[in-house]
Amino acid sequence: MNIQGAKATVSPLGDLANRLTVRIRARRERRRLTALLELGDHILCDIGLTEGDVTRKLSRPLCERPG
Image (tube, rainbow, N blue to C red):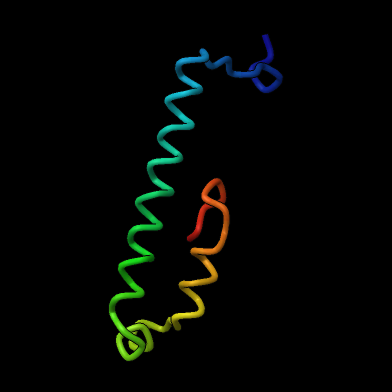
């Protein structure tokens, strides 16, 4: 059998677990981005970011990875 043409089958429970994992990671990334906003403009500048950079990434939908 040709493996290149085969599709991986995922159980409904496995699919749910994958979607939950993605959602949990996205929420963690958002918490980290939110924490960056608390650092202040001078520290953000030191790491090459602006408040606008972080705010733009936070304004994206949760299903879209902010990073």
